[in-house]
Length: 408
Image (cartoon, rainbow, N blue to C red; front, side, top):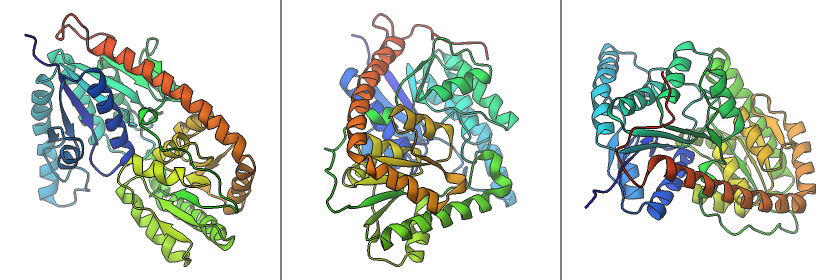
């Protein structure tokens, strides 16, 4: 009798980012439906959360627990350095125990937010190199990518992508970015973000008179190349978003502030402190399902974080994006709302209000558009899962050599 396929999932999962966890949930749903006998476990950022929430065994991604804190003391610096060496052995041993490892979605091939090369890019490289060494098929499924300025980060990302047995992307700009980095993407496909495979609540009906607005905020400081002016970018973003929320409240609109990561709570607190109105409240959300319920109950959504946008669009609610990267623009274009993007780096509250009012005037039409685009996305993701099964779960031999690989 053949033993179950051993499947690992890998990434910054269970670490407080709802988008990352939503991508994991979508992949686990696929595995349980299509490969119910697979033995699944995780190597991830928050193993306790992943095990408690999803019921699978999980191991901590990094040996050194302070990996993502700035090391200033000698002991912390030594601990981080030692951790890099220990993680080589830990990652290799974990990969070797699996037939397949899936990296579920996430922006693992980009640096649109501040990123150090020896953090997650290094961890991803260790994963993909170990997969090549031990014949374990590593799949980057529906991932995000973007041009990367830092040379070392770019090198690690490029080599990781080349070593993977399977690659697919959540938008065309991601595939283009990998090709421009020197990766052969001729056989790689583009599908909607994995979160579109999650169940959505029933769309709400617009309120009469105008009802609640969800505003998704983000602890935004620019990208990896913006470190020198990160505080200026953050201040401009916070000031513009606060002015916009205040204007909505003064118009009598209830406003629900949404987050997508634990770090966003500081922005919510700052806005609540600045806008002293009972109409402005903060939502408590622990999953993308919670976010979708909030956005489905709103008349309109204005959001920054990428998976806040996805939740609103998946729920069928007219949405305006405070866009900080090409992935946001590509998502809005895919869903038929390309006109309704506003730069997160330069939030102009007056201009944002104009765009918001224009969006609301077309609300009924845009709800129909979103319903149609969501049906298309669901069909395309079914194609993604069919392709994934063909690539990673060959019927004849679970241990056959990886495919679609290149020389790093």
